[in-house]
Image 1 (cartoon, rainbow, N blue to C red):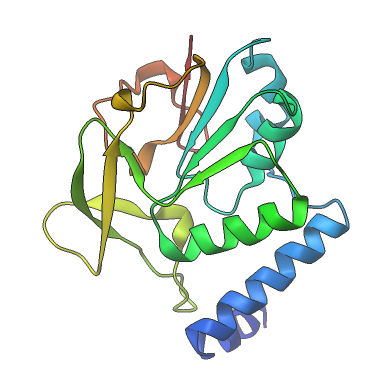
Image 2: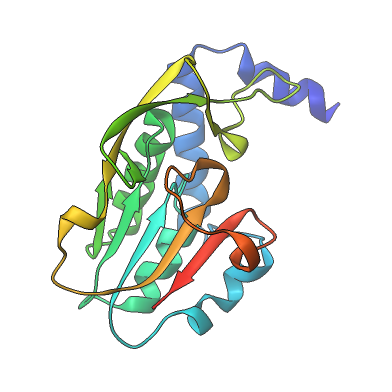
Length: 189
């Protein structure tokens, strides 16, 4: 029965699907249910230092961005690099509902160089796009994303934490023991 109910929205036009998601996330935000169930989510305060800014590379719809924004406070910044247009749209709408003013949204992939890369977005069994497991793909794919180099940004504050979705990492970042159960990498300075 549940699979059948998830297949119905997959038949709607893409715009309607986005609108349904936006309303659902707005409901979660207003009822204080907008959070991640991943184990490291509740321990994020342990990762942050008292100074510096935060990078979240491919934050999807913004669960972690919301928490980072709360933890760092209004005097520090959180940067969100999201290269997928559909999730970026939802991320921006969610942050507008949250009224977070210390978040900078960038609709690009973070990388070690400026370039265009292909991205593959698998589908759920219900035929809806599964953005949670989107990944960079060799060759050409249906979605090409713009990547920007992070180092030349020359930010005035140090980055004290970088959360990087390992599947979408377009850099030579070492993943080894920093990979969490969710497939994210954490780097600290």
